[in-house]
Image (cartoon, rainbow, N blue to C red; front, side):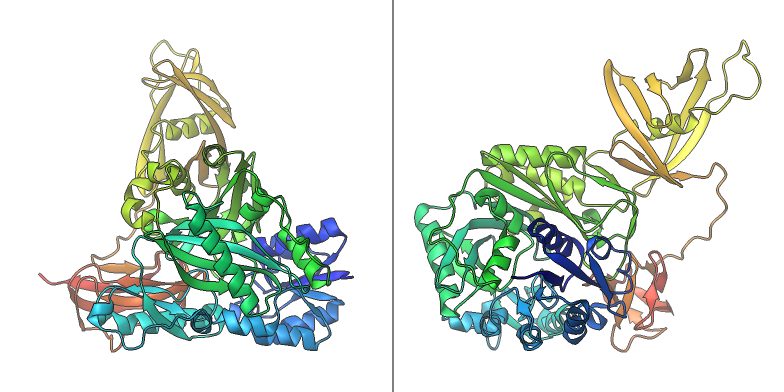
Length: 613
């Protein structure tokens, strides 16, 4: 039997696999890059092995280093997790050649299905060859990997060349494989998938369906099981096609067959020869541990002839360190606190951990299970709304609003959901009283200079920044304590403020970390009373919206060049995604600080375009 497992991955998936291993009495080995030296997955494992370097190409994509680490640590088996090398047949062979157990499908099955182009051929489909106007819109897609990386929608022929180039670069960075292909883009379809589990004795389970239609940049945001609103005939067809795909390549272990469903028809997308990020919803509905079953299959144990019966409904939301209102820009910094009550939480972070620029910005997965879909949705939305999230900006508001949107609650959503509703989902009105609560908590315990006088005290002033907006708060000390116009202060101390507004009491838990202040769910930055004068950026300045690496500058670009508004100038890579920085105005390039390969901090000046007068 397997006694020690090395997980060739990082973050929440490594922690999740370690949890099952611990329950089974299996020792664990983590691998980590230099930025991950103090990451949670490296801390919770029994043993950790350093992979020298920072980027995925130097570390988590180095199969030779990982196999060497497994042998050195005395591991009996390797679990690939998802992403990185999880669908790399050469890595699977290297693990087997080293005399280790591979907790995954045979290398031949990975080769047959891990390349999306070969998978389509196996299912009787072919990607597009030469693209014409009549083929539009089309989707440029990486042949390897997943997670939406290396994908571009093309609606105009003149955009195809740039889309191919960008997709190749992103895929090569994320997966070490720059192969891409082009296929028709199905508008307004639903993304539905089937969980597969197969053993070495010929048994193949199809563990129901999942709906993953709510996506941003082709990466899933909210998933659920079972997929709602499918006809019995379509459900049966999806399960049959999934089992057929698995048997076609003599599949072993956990895998997922993905489809787009449009107009009541199933269109095969790909087979992911690994565990999926959204596997917890299937675990909840079928009351199984898929990682434990993967390990059992790798040990040669047979599955029961029939899978367990489904019960209830489960919904999962991916919590990202990103700002959906700012083109999904990833965020970095210290995660001071993360608690989400009443639901399953899979995370690779603990309070006080740093969120860096090198890897995916997903902080955690929150999963709710209930007897019905409506109850599961309500449970998850409520838990997220009550969550304590102190640190970088997250997509929490987007998740709560998405779960409560009528299109989602009635199961009428599709993959264009965020294209239609992003603005409304991210424009929740701010709490007008949260800054006052923060100011009152800050004032608690501070002595008023001098004695009481028979005249009103002058108001105290506190300034905050909230989502780029400067806010000024006024309050005063009265005979009965702190006072504020139009608001009754019921209670105020350093950690809790209770305000009464129009007869309704509002409770605010307040926490501070330097100049970062959190009043309830509102994040604020305390501003100095007398701020130092700051130099203003010149009009037409392009600044880095996030920390990252300059991976590309527009061809032939130099100071003095004429630039059109919206023209791409610089490409940044942060958290495994590329972000295009475009000219804000039409004019002349007067400054160019960006250098390919250079690391930039958030707010760094990249270039300046002087607007034509």
